Amino acid sequence: MKSEALRVSVDELRRMFPRKSRSWVARSLRRFLNGDVKKISENTWLVMGRREMGDALPHYVVRYINNRYVCDCQASMGEGRVCSHIGAVVLSNIYDSMTKTVYAAVINTRCRDSQLLIIGDKAHEINVRNVANDTGTIYILIASSELSVKALLACDDELREEVLRLRPMELWEVLTFERGVAKIRKG
Image (cartoon, rainbow, N blue to C red; front, side):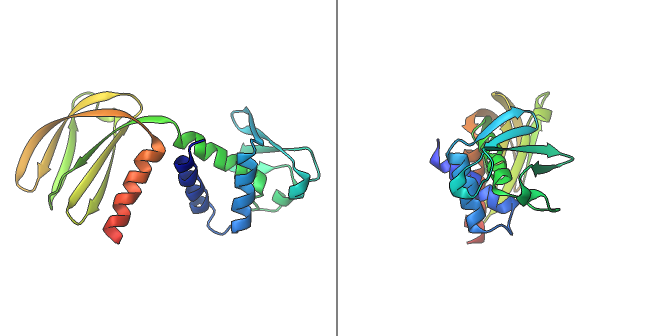
């Protein structure tokens, strides 16, 4: 297990459920780290019950139905209730997506006014994110396959063509970089 990817995943779980207690996050994390979550089908998971965590049954079924998670434990029976079984499933899903390989490139423009335009037939395959900071704009390009693309970069009064190679990274690395740049900007 990759500790930095896990930290980013737990941060994302907290962001998704800001009203949940530290205890709930810890219990969800414990279930995940213990390997209690097993995916059964596309929208169904089996979560092992643990007596030491107050579970009465040996396992619980969590389903994703109508855009929300539902658990068969009593803690989630109320509207809007989210038990730690659901928390563990959500954390497992976040971690799985964070550790998937994406392909990324970073351009640090170091100019006050910039615009990046991907040119060519691969432009629709690329997600472009931008983060402004004190020295300019940083563009982060993300795709699902390794690509080399041409781009036009307008930087202040200058226009130049760049050839960018998107290289394999895990999604958590890209997000950590992006959030780090945003924190520097705010700090």
